[in-house]
Length: 277
Image 1: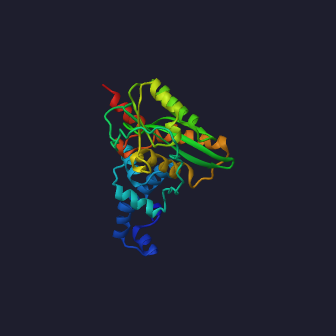
Image 2 (image 1 turned 90 degrees about the vertical axis):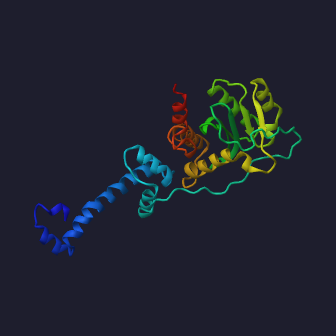
Image 3 (image 1 turned 120 degrees about the vertical axis):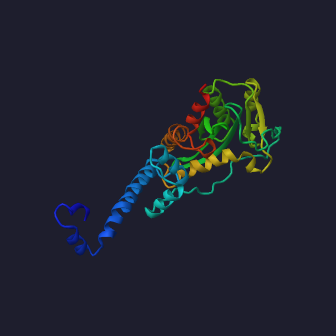
């Protein structure tokens, strides 16, 4: 009807479509707005590769000038049958059956910190590929939730976590007195990992045995990675998997993904804001 108003009278159009004049104008006022809003929600959803739900998309849309509520975005996603990927359960990689010394739990679940390079948390997860397993170790700064160091390997050994920590140190300018909190797996208790801790004057902290909540932020990152970068898309060979992890961490998670702990800012933008005088 809207397209043919110039060629036919409104009365004729309403009779042909069996609608009232008031109903048409109500649709034109509200229905078109809803359609345009749905289009922008869908664009934001696909722009994030289906990784974000209503809370994060609401912040993204508001930042780009569309004033919508989380409830409105949620209804739009439901109406368009746009569903966020869900993570599957995955097995633990912690080997705590060893004779290495254990460090005390210095963090005590204090996941909110005041400045960068105060506390880094680390963990390991597995990645199934067409060429067998890969293992990913990360170091996250609790201040901004930024992944400051990471490493992928075909072996889940001490070298994997050593390289992840060395990567974080190099990326952050080798700061001293950073608390390094991990689980009590053999990789983190090894002599070589402790040697890095001692060399750079870091402080080591470990979760209690079998208590994943003591390292919940790192666990949450892996859940997001599995949900948003892996499940729903088949993993390829080792090279393709490394590329996908690089894209997720360096191009998306650190720089684009809005985090509730950062006031819905990305880790990089959150740190940039707090570094300004």
